Image (cartoon, rainbow, N blue to C red; front, side):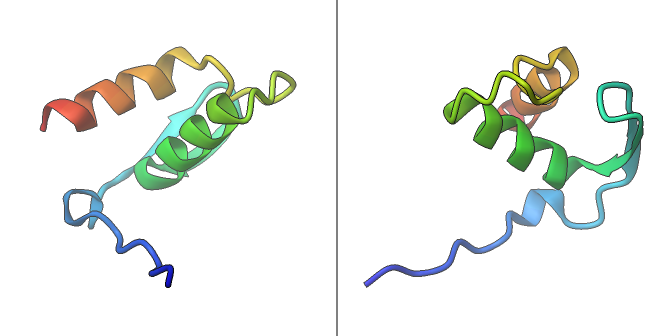
Amino acid sequence: MLYPLMPQTKMEGEADFYCSGLKRRVALAKCMDWFVDHNALRRKESPCFKCALGTANRENFARS
């Protein structure tokens, strides 16, 4: 049986930031979701693929 993933408590209440790739404000949780999905699925047409800001966000999250 599969269970839905629970949201990370580290990400609750995180502020939005301006994403230069998407040219809009994005929540940190959404940024990381899209970054991981698009890199795992190799969606090269997406601005999230190999995004430097997404990489930095993911590394900072992993350190915390």
